[in-house]
Image (cartoon, rainbow, N blue to C red; front, side, top):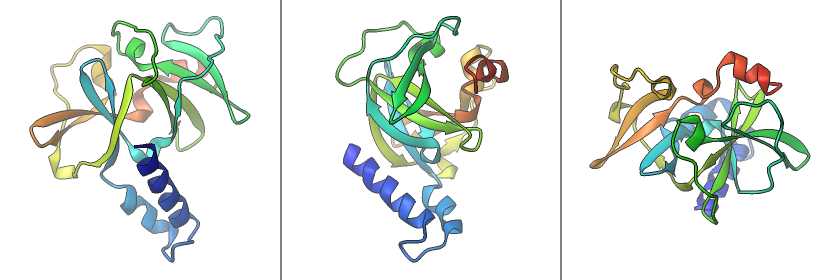
Length: 179
């Protein structure tokens, strides 16, 4: 799994830098309809791969006082301090102890201006979900979690919940994390 993601990241970086003979404008098409699938509890969620910077194993998180309950703290990732959000807590799910499958998905928000780490139970795969297989989110969702859903991706007989990365945090939450 990590090899697949590493290959995709390298291809993406090569394209962005023009090392593969393509032009940087082609990058958007390469990543279109590509999603990172991960699990929280019994459900599979997806994020557009263009938001994902990297996936790292769970590591020491430094707690920061006066943060929302779902912000576990910050990590030092190669000299950059990144806030870490436990996605189970963000979605008002029951927390659980981290294990060897728990990982942090580092994503870019606000057009790359902000990096945030998302703690997930496990990363599944990078997969393609074509736009015509994505349905709009249900309108009946009145809970806070409903606003994070960009759509529902049909993959065979399964449904993947596609999240809108830029809506995982509200403006005031960005401010409280110093972003």
